[in-house]
Image (cartoon, rainbow over all chains, first blue to last red):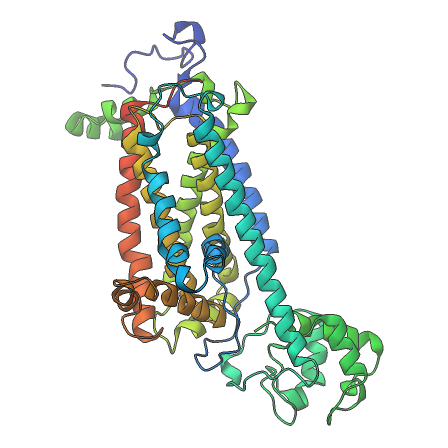
Length: 254
Length: 223
């Protein structure tokens, strides 16, 4: 039997007025082709994002380096933030009770909102509940991100009276990012003589994760007028080169 | 030629009704953005599935190079990032795709919730959808450890510590997760196995149920 036996060869695949329900269309090929267009645009945007936002790899996990400020991936931040509001004896609420109640409410929503009506305006309790929850989750996520950024900044502040201390690890466990940057070439030709080609340290201290503690401006100021045994400008020839190296070093966050 | 081959198979297996059923299935106008632009909200579920498909594909290619042991995991990820042809793109797809699945799934869930599409007779499909949500969060939690860098290690350490603080059962959950009392060699192999075998199996079963139920119950009508 030929495919689609009911269709006379050469006729259009369907016509609106032939259908039981005008306005509907068959899934294949009519709807799927349009859906693929939407999907292609979506994928293209996604691939552009991926190509222009390369993913970093930090330095190798080091269980001894307790100075690292841990943070979960962004989609767990709201749960992480929630914990902070239930300190001490109330910890139970943050770790298990509130998340558990939330998960159960979500799972059993169809049995909590049993009215027949579906329009969001006609079931204000359910709609308001979900809107509030959504805003709360977004707010908690943002709050956690802001607080983490502040913690990292504070940690670098503690380090500023002296110099940040970056644990010594093997050069092979360091991953420098953005090695196509001009600053990287300058680093290799000058700074690396004392700090090592991966910033693992040598005559100078390890600086492979200096970007975690100091931003580009602070690095620039330091290289221009270093303390300790470091030569002025780190033997770089111009302020412009110092800026390039500082910009690149600021990206090395370990 | 192609038609002959098709007919040969069709004569023996009668496949026409199978795909014809899917192909001729009528898509209602109120979910079709080509008819009404605002219906784009009905695309979120399909787009979630699209991203999940790219996650499965990019994950399969990453698994060709990734080594799940604590001495080599980090080096293998660095090799993927710096040496393998297009390795950083495939890793980027998998990394960003993970966030995109969460975002699209969340939007899809909001659409279903606000259009009240989970009401009778579709309660079970909502429950399956929420379970898919949990499974995807599991993917995120286990996948985050695999590059074995500082960020990964300490995030998992904190996650396990939180699980351990749950009264009574906490320590057992922690041991189950870590395979030990601390994040280490057993944790990495465990998370890898969960990430590439256990969770995909669960996800595929749940997705199949999700789609079969959509077909059986149809898309909810217009508001």
